[in-house]
Image 1 (tube, rainbow, N blue to C red):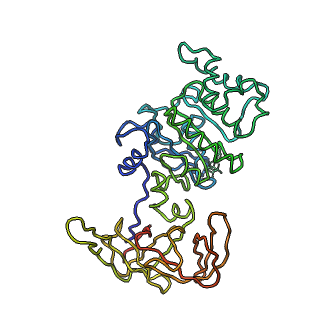
Image 2 (cartoon, rainbow, N blue to C red):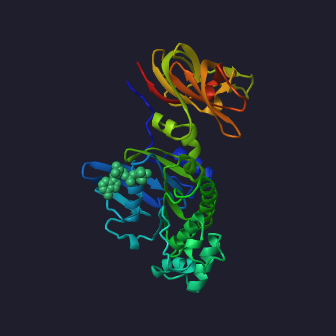
Image 3 (cartoon, helix red, strand yellow):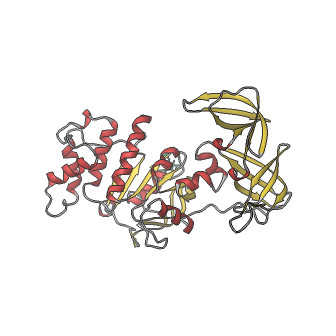
Length: 397
Ligand code: ATP
């Protein structure tokens, strides 16, 4: 029977604990979510762009939808914004259904990839345009509100400038100020940085996160860039074929991917599969009350070499010889001639990245990726420690 760990279709208590530790808004896992998708499907003809999605976004959270092209990220965002209505299922804001509520009545600010600033208006007028849909807070004039927002996005002197005289990153900050002007409850950002170059993207993502934190505004962010998703979010939903495959804080998605797809989509990874040859109970390390029990490990035959893999987590308890195990080891945990589990491979190519070199090794026709500071060539032995392997799935015999 296959017992691949369930992909988490929605937030779990464990996620809530880790998200809280990283400062993600609500501390109670069962507090009313700011945004909730309940069995939401959106079909275009035969295509289910969004396929029975259930998700909860917490109040004040920075929540990111990430995934390859066509996985349904933008459609999910458009459904939340109200530009599309679901074919099935319900969307709730703070517990209230928004079915039939038009976008302008949803209290959402939206920023798209192409800044969409009005070229015939100054920067200040563009931001002020956002105030056509809601009055400034009481006691604050329109001009004061515009100045406040330009301060927030770190463009205090730009009010009289022509938008086209600004850089792409600055224009995108103006677009954010305009979206935030009416004081929305929810900020929706659809690939806001994809038109910018890499350096600008890195700078802007720090600024976007800072603005979001200052306002504590619930934010749903769409990107296809997994690094950006990890860097900016409280939690990430990795989407595939119209559904979230894993929903978790960035560290969990990176270290404990729930499936092979997530393991390979998020960052470099080395995925192995093989038959279990033995299972060892964890040895007691040290003596006395402070002693630790090391996690259980399994010996796994991968292409003729037995690799020891930590199996303390899911699927570990019932594991038996003959079972087929899939696991992954991040390149940073594969070390040259070190580690308890060792395997031999041949250098196929190397990319010098400055701080490290990313080396692709060939092992019996399969690629392995390591990161190293030293030049490598020919045949090399690489290894990892059992606890640095993460089990993705078990097929019991
Ligand atoms: P990308 O990163 O390329 O923008 P995405 O993850 O945002 O992709 P969506 O734009 O949500 O994906 O599209 C999901 C699927 O739905 C795709 O197969 C797309 O072709 C289809 N789709 C989206 N909008 C429409 C539409 N208006 N009519 C028909 N099909 C659509």
